Image 1 (spheres, rainbow, N blue to C red):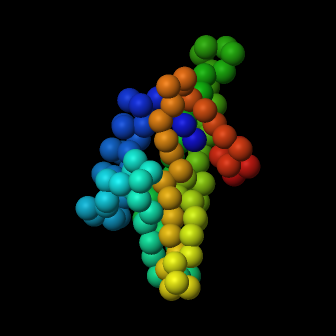
Image 2 (cartoon, rainbow, N blue to C red; image 1 turned 30 degrees about the vertical axis):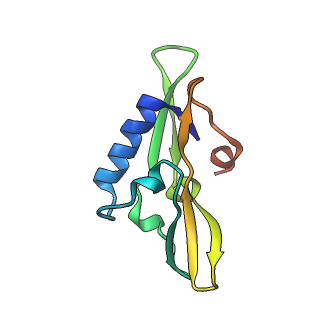
Length: 106
């Protein structure tokens, strides 16, 4: 999922304020670092569901897309067979909202 920079910043701020993880590395949010948990543990309980409201063709109507943490906190690597590592799956876009295949499959 790619979001305009100001929207991404607001989403990250909302996630960090509601996440059960305190003092999370800023590198995770900007995509430069992975977050790892012990093998078999999943981090999704620590992150909220995200909802995006999109306006329908009739401007007085909208619809909602709900994105589960499993779709934006993505498994990426197994380290030494002891850690499962994840990446933050949201990034910035210069061209507006981009909803990719991963979100659409969810």
